[in-house]
Image 1 (cartoon, one colour):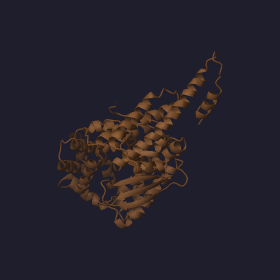
Image 2 (tube, one colour):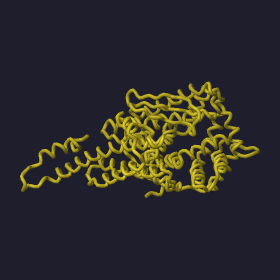
Image 3 (cartoon, one colour):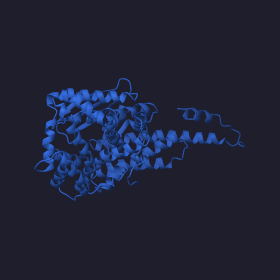
Length: 447
């Protein structure tokens, strides 16, 4: 920290003249206020972490990652707090934050804003754990800080018409697309090699622009019985466990997608940079815990999805998959362009996923109708459409963080400059600071 930070504030506070008739210098007063605010904020941050861990004992999966003091996690388990006590604790922390005077220090103010937003999300999730339900839009706003602009499904029909020309034939379009894509499944005995190779390339491209922590690494596992297709469990000390769900066939495009999203420059890098730059670098304990249902998730998922196109821009990805991954998977490289064209066209359907989730969770359609609509507008098999609906049931409005989050992150990063260097630096800044969704310039209804 610069000389105008906490150390300087402490020194200046000690040197204040003691003569009663002589008022303290304005700069000394400001620094003293900042020091007091910083001290109280550190105390609030510690209590916020303990509160989050306690909430995690009430709902499995609420805490996505934690690498702070082990005794805090042990205390949350050994001395659990009931929901009424936790609700009161959230309110008390919010009041303590509100009582802090303006410090004049941008860093302190950014911490206050971040903690305030996280606690607002905790209020909503606390109510949901106790059985309260919210409309989709209200829930999304309460948990993630934004309200998505949902498009009518009919607006996606022209996209389906365009894809009809890519995959012509008889029968439902979703079945034709599924049949076409079945020619691009990675054989199970080649999954490890293909994914190891793809993740290594994602890392190499990220390391070209970003200074990754020394000793960072991850473990890759293939699992079954999940509603998601991939997950990153951050372990702390720059280590991650990345899991890939093999319940359904895995297509060749998934290797780069997962390598970037769960790994580099996605979740693995996001958590590492927060740990290195904020938790360890500044001693901000609030970043040692990651509550899944919070504004952090929109930044995390949005940056992880945008990271795919940042690392593999356009033709680069097609060339890499065709020349490297297709041979490893035993697929015909000469057909790569046709598969890639279909994947690009399907990207325009991503917004339909949010609309279908909203309709289902708000009770406007049945589960079977949601599965059918996912199959039609996401152009997936019935099995994968059912898995997507399972995800909506488990994680509810969390789905907004993927499509909307990516759009918000893309708009913000690409506004920083056209050159790859500047976009990578903007990405690194986004992953290293307490940025909130409302800090990003997007077409979104904000509070």
